[in-house]
Length: 314
Image (cartoon, rainbow, N blue to C red):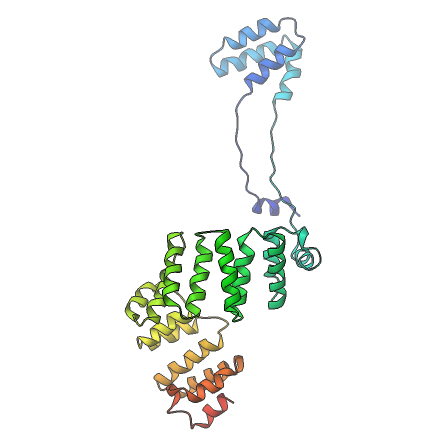
């Protein structure tokens, strides 16, 4: 690799300590120069730096030994902080074959290198076994279990994480999200408030609770800084701001079935059949459970007999 390329990624901290007068005096003191006492007295009597330097130049002409002392004082100290890091391929391999050779951070990182849920769970469990007093793996495994609908398991893991790291804003946030998912809005509010006191911004999540409680105006205020999220779009739909809701959903990349379903509802409310059918088709292709829901949803009562609607939910 070329030096110019390396320099772009390296931060250099440089400092100049000036002339090493103490080092020079110590070197003269330790030398075999016959008149070293006289030399030291002359140098020490010069208060001005330039005068000291001139006196040294004068003495070099008389004492060749001084010329031998100076090169050793012209020095630079270089300290390099570096790390020997493993490649992603090595980390992924060791996570499965030799997990105890990895640090906690490396184990947690290895979980991000796979999309397989079971592999992720196995990695987090290994991290718990190897580092039972560290809250991170309990917290991450809890989030994964919750995403699979295993809420009781997720709760136990979060309780353990909370006991290992009390008043941790991230853990408290996840406890609040779990409560919110299960419809425990009061529990969610308590957890989000505690998380905010621990330094974790919670305005958006508190806005979600307000929306669930029917206070859409308060929710709009608290969720104002949210961008491209399902709950923000839902609150905009509930306040009948269909254009804003549509824009919020359309800016979401890799939409879920729920987000396509919400777009279909917006299509129904704005009497745009093409948007109903295209979004329902996308929704049902991602999650077949929406086929039954759409067939019974009163949002689509004026479109249920349409052949394109029926085709979209087949």
